[in-house]
Image (cartoon, rainbow, N blue to C red; front, side, top):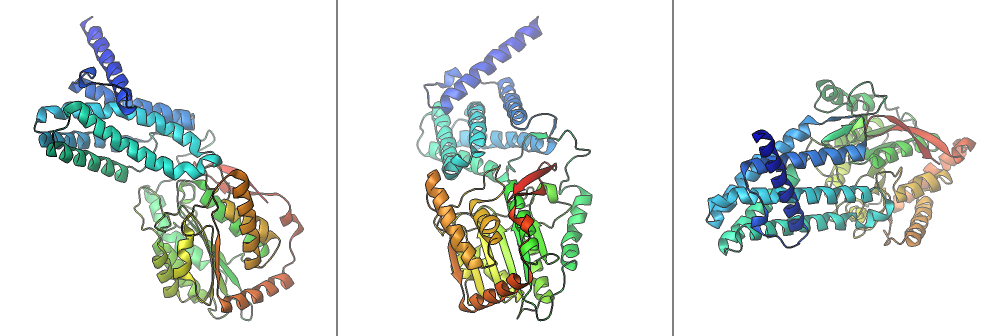
Length: 483
């Protein structure tokens, strides 16, 4: 009976703490005496937060599935970090006895953020939410900082310089947690027909395989043909968080092999958990090695290299290269320009499908280069939601325009018009795709266009809807409709 009574008391205290935490997070009236502070309640809140995380993961991903022990260990490791930071903050406030209360109040707010995050994740899958995605991220960060300020105020009030130091410590804790968090799910769904667990970089055989993949793909590239303007394709899908980029690159390769004679002369660098044993990773080092090998393979005075980059882009013009748990260098305009210059490749078509990609124009343009970007330097591009097969611009450029013409400048004009009309019709701000075409490159492209038009009549079947088989992040095979 005593054990049952203690359990009931613990549950009542937990319920009270959760309710008070919700009120605090949503800026309703709450006092420190509304919380029940004890070591047992602190532990109960940790368990409650993990249970809610698990439940939301199951709701998002469904059954069957498994617990991700790595994510669980990372979450548990954050608890002593929270306690240590709260102890330092309490010392700054002049009362170390406040450390437990401060940690408990902060933890009590977490379920509110978990629930709100689940709603945002649901909305993020909708194309209509895409223009608001970045604003939502900033709003979430501002909300978290405001909750930290209010938590400290509820526990200790304002104590001048001590409170300011405490707030800096707690804000630093938030920054650290955001930096080290891989964004993993506690619950990982597994397909009903999967025979084994999805490959991971942390598995020895996968890590070993990656060490040889790039060399194998490069060695398999077809040789250049004297007297023929060969087109070689390099596709890079940078962000592993969404299948859209990998699907886009695979579909573009399929199109170019069909219509632009790149079969046997194309290579993909992809960050996606489903392709770890099949495709080299999209890293700056792999891109540098690929372009350097291409320069040795092709006739640099005759052949053309098409480089397509697909990922998220930032306002400071960094192309995201991401594959947890690796910490990858991001691709900046200056880094890309340096890699291209070092490679020795002369004739280049560079297409960048990313937000703010217009920032790459100036560092890359020259007389021997065509640069095409999905947006200007100050605007987002669209279509990279989780269920997209192509970004809007790439779909218009490749899947529509380049099925009708061999001219890249002509295809760009068509794609820019189509994207502008789509953005206007759906109420999005204009992305303003950009182009920079060197004079010498214009003549080289005309030469390539003439060869392709004369030697490769369009396959009638390529004008019809077709299905391309690609892999998704959960390693199950799916059919993706193309055109």
